[in-house]
Length: 65
Image (tube, rainbow, N blue to C red; front, side, top):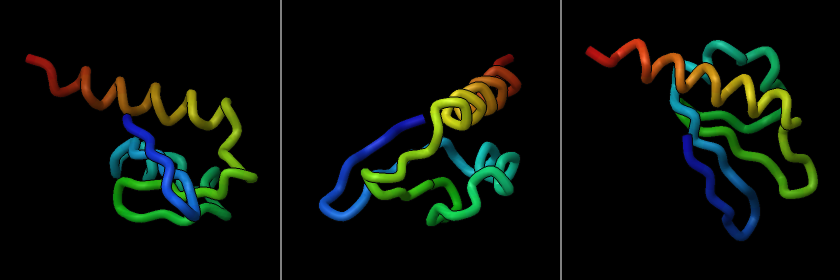
């Protein structure tokens, strides 16, 4: 999970799986395979970010030997 700020938007980088899992919750945001782009004036709600982080942690833990 990563994030970045750019001149015209901010981005979250949770990866493809969390975006696919929560695609309905992400309607209204610009999406690509592993990126969520949003305006600084309209960030995703904290509850959605928590879901994305938990999904990413679960994905990473499932890959551990």
